[in-house]
Image (cartoon, rainbow over all chains, first blue to last red; front, side, top):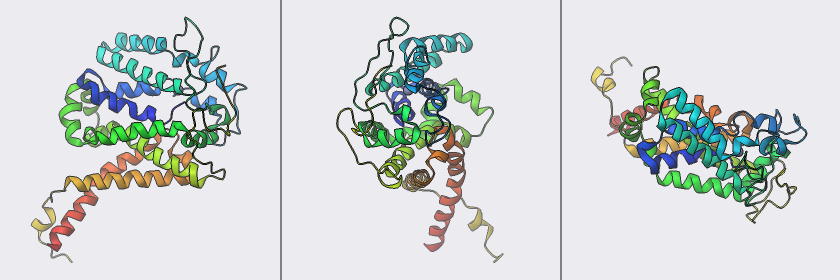
Amino acid sequence: MSWAAHDLEPYLMRAKLGGAVSLPFLLIGSYSPDILTKWAVYGLDFSGNNKLVDDPVQLHRGFPGVGFTHSLFFGIVVGLLILWLSGSRMWAFSFILGNWAHVLSDTLDSVGVMLLWPLTDWHLHFDAWQYVGQAGRRVDAIAYYTSLGGVWDILWAVWLLWNWRILTTDYFRNEIYPKDHFWHWLGRRASETVMLTVYRASAFFGIASIIGWFVWALLVNEYQAALDWSLGGPQWTPRVGPP
Amino acid sequence: MPSASPTAGSATPRIPGSWSVAYWVAAVLIYAALGTQLPQAVFLGFWQSLPYVLVFHWLRPKVLGALARGRGAAA
Ligand SMILES: [Zn+2]
């Protein structure tokens, strides 16, 4: 799985595709595969000692399970639902793009995704880093941020910081607000401060959490793993493949 | 002291863009530092950052405005 990459990818897609896409719906799409299920995969607490299911990998990425949320088909179905409910092609298209970015990012770990479900439950996985979700959130955080997963997050953060102007108030007022009815809807109910908070929160969280997780994984937690940027790392975790 | 002139107190000083950048860098670092101590309280998902980001937005004109007025007074 990827961590802050899912928070940051939508901003870069908005920067590249401009007014053809909606940042809020890119973000909802990007969060959609995991938002309802991650608590069950990890268990209820940070330590991972409160397991809820016997086979978190099967639940998260398999079928039976909720692995279908990580398929191209799922994005299209929910996108069509959004089109039907809202009438907005831009919102539907943005949801699909955000969802697909998440799905494709998750192919980089050792479990991967059922990309073509329901045609097949075959998993596409590139094994750049280990899937460690079954060990709970705490161990997964250490493993992810000391492996190439952490590098993947840094790449998105650097790309976003390179494009930092898209986070300015002027950019929001002149480029974001006028081109997406979502902001007009929100603007009738909330102040510009609230709109800017909604606009920037995921970028703020993504960058702050990358910095904080790196420090925590390398210096603060009791295990204190070292960086392991080998393919398929870190090597101290158990090897986990598709269910 | 109640003698500060109303014009000096009410004038809105211009806040340089570089101050805003520095402010947000500091805000990100504060949140990151909080996460290194209590990751489960602030790093589980972006929704945990919403109240913090809202407060940082609310504080920005107050903090930078006070700094700009302080610089104006010193000049
Ligand atoms: Zn995922």
